[in-house]
Length: 86
Image (cartoon, rainbow, N blue to C red; front, side, top):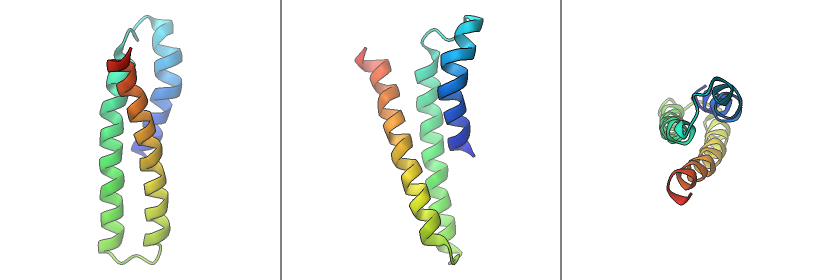
């Protein structure tokens, strides 16, 4: 859920809606970093929860979570590059 919210913010709200309202000057990457870190944390917690419960789908869910963490990591690096790299 958090990852989905992050994507909506990163690809709809920050690049389209906030600039139309004149509110997005440099704010997007900072919020993106925060949301990415929180989303990665929740994905890690999900992996741990599924493995502790010995859920039959734990490996499939873990693979999905790892893929999402990978994508979030790319977005995190892009946001950090926007902030510190120019």
